[in-house]
Length: 319
Image (tube, rainbow, N blue to C red):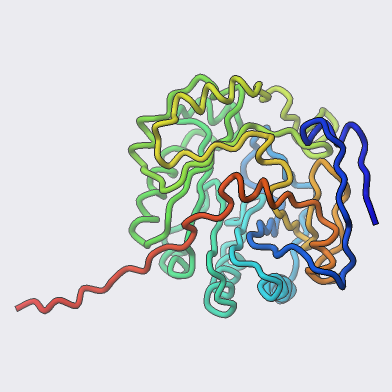
């Protein structure tokens, strides 16, 4: 069976019509190597360009979430990233899923994306040993710019720097996510990136997604944040000597992520409607119906050094 999409959809993928074979659930399927599980849409921030907005307040019961994660591992998932919304609105729920994935399912890499505002040292004391990476969002090192974007009320940077220190203390790899947009396009972030020294600094070109942040009728309207490809490239060029820099333009980012929503449905952002939950149809059938550009996933470096090194105990005798 073949699926052909409209010219408008095709334009989003470089001007060509998207044509691919939809396999049945009994045929081979792409392995969900790396999955982003957005278990909540709720957030305590109001970033104006957010493309995964609080359309619902639904969350799966934790046992159902665990069941879905086990299905994903059995289907080939090696890395899971917990995201939102803001996942630390539910620290116990998040912590138990992090522990379950690493300790019970032996997932190769367990990570979380957060705005950092609700992360407590006590959480890291309890769950840090199960977490490989914490990615913290920071779009500017000017607090006024952060507030214009909607990221916090004026203390985001203080929290951000403290969290970089806590991650090192608890042996969690520290990553930074930055959305490059109209408000920070001219900023030079080199000095602060060198100060916090993330092992990975991912810089996304601000993305507009139909039905999420594309107009005045959606919860967010990202149109005022949009920049051109050339402007985005200028920002990247300014920071190109940073070894941790990982640029992701709109062309690279679109459909190269496997995004699982609060119902455990894979999303087809900007292409077509979500498919049925993996809890209902299973992972193979879901993977055969989701549009995931695994070639772009590979091209953008979707697989990387995503496991932390365990701290070595000092076995030297002290006489």
